[in-house]
Image (cartoon, rainbow, N blue to C red; front, side, top):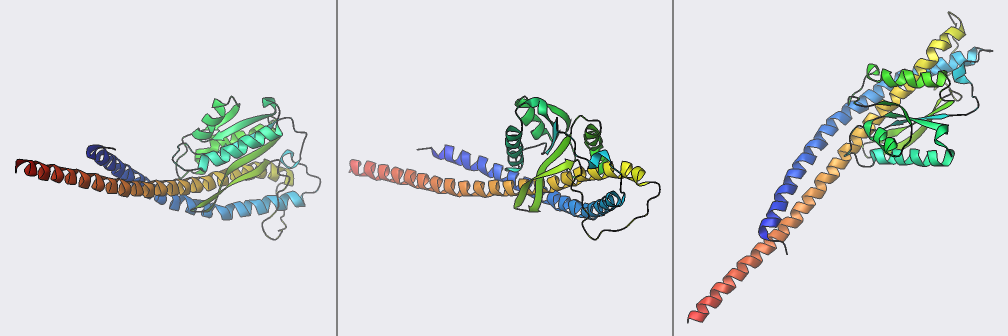
Length: 285
């Protein structure tokens, strides 16, 4: 049985740990609230650019932009969005496990695919397994702006345009609620399933539809990436907030259990001392 000093030391260290996890929970809650607002604020822009891109693509008969046309698949790119840090529950492991299983099912050779990693945890995961990471970005702020991700959005779309990849998939955690984040797979390129979110609108093109699509479609693809990163950040902060809350609750339960154990051990020690005193006094009579 542990001594009173050992139990008290464990209680003290657990209390300090619970203070840290509680503070991290409060910090994540503040970041989560702002991240959710950012994701929601970006959604109207996403809906509008999708509506315009779909309307222009549908109304420009005879125009076949490379981003709208499927081609023979020689190499596939996987854009995987994770966090730079852990302590977020299953946020990273769930999406990485899904991507890894998908790759094993779809491909027989590493020459058939490559990874684009947004986040240090995902980058390290694939590097340790000898999987080619074609492009990476780490150190994104908790509330990223579009300027923060241009190092990955532009090159990612460019690698499809120059033929490095024949198709691009994106994997991230979609934010549903503070306690639910769903692993999501989305085909980023080619844009074969682009469709308006509302009623189709007719546009007059100036200059030509080809020139408009040349500018609009890369911006739309980059916006999809940015929207997924904002969504992923909201999910990350929510997952970390939930994980830290669980850690704090577990610490409190452990403190209660140790306190009960400490009180029982102290009572046993006091009882033992009283017994010894009574026994000594009786021996002197």
